[in-house]
Image (cartoon, rainbow, N blue to C red; front, side, top):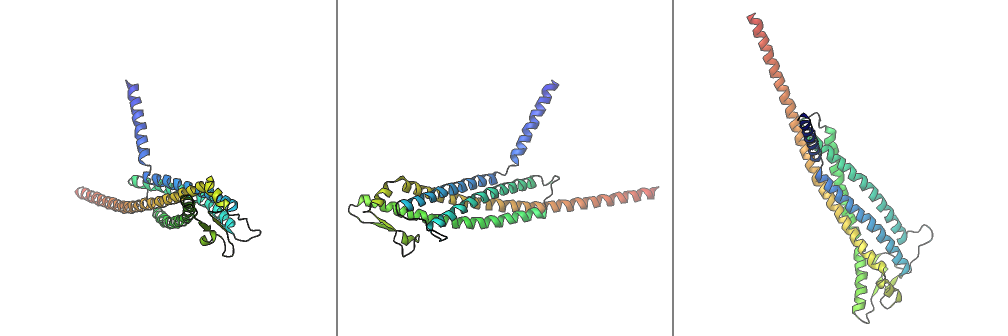
Amino acid sequence: MEENMEEGQTQKGCFECCIKCLGGIPYASLIATILLYAGVALFCGCGHEALSGTVTILQTYFEMARTAGDTLDVFTMIDIFKYVIYGIAAAFFVYGILLMVEGFFTTGAIKDLYGDFKITTCGRCVSAWFIMLTYLFMLAWLGVTAFTSLPVYMYFNLWTICRNSTLVEGANLCLDLRQFGIVTIGEEKKVCTVSENFLRMCESTELNMTFHLFIVALAGAGAAVIAMVHYLMVLSANWAYVKDACRMQKYEDIKSKEEQELHDIHSTRSKERLNAYT
């Protein structure tokens, strides 16, 4: 009988421990982190492959070649964008971990307010710093989203020309890279519907795959923006909760101090009365 009671208490203790651990998880921060990682992964992975496909299309169908030397051409810019993608992936992987850690500490600070844990001014400053940094990153991701929409627009035009060339017989439509600023005005790099390169490009899988990869990369950038907005809401709410908790903590300290003073006064008076009687 005693063994069964001990086993029941042990199971109850484990269950309470699990409930306590689950209650300390910052679910809002966890959802925002998952959304951020998904968006960054889509943007970086699909964006990198789309840039590689763009290089293949330019070299194969537009007959462009890398410029010798240190000249800044479109291929050099694509290489720079790839390195930027590597940096974005690494930076936001670390930033997501930092925001999750901040969420855990803030949740623990709120739940353990009346325990031994004390909310410090440094913790509030860190929360305010994360709010400002997340706001700046949200603006940066808005710029990235707008910038990513440019290749989507360019490939949509190219896809439309390929589609119209099959619908309208005898139409001579051309796509000139100079109108997109990819090449200088002096260079004439264009393909027309009557050329063999254009027909091969429209029938190739590179064009369709690159177009859809840029669309997915754009969706990933949009998901990262939503994650940043979600983080802003979470961080602002946590900062407000911590601020109110600090006020409540100060109130409890003052109340405890006053009660102690009243207790000391009553003790002193009791001793004086006892001395007077004796």
